Length: 33
Image 1 (tube, rainbow, N blue to C red):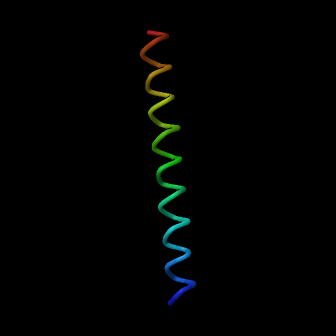
Image 2: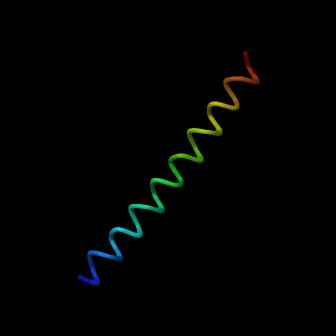
């Protein structure tokens, strides 16, 4: 159970990082356009 919760936290962190990267790319696309 502890291992599952740790894995869930890692997945949440990766999702947050992916969202930040997507937001940065969207901002860059808007600046270029």
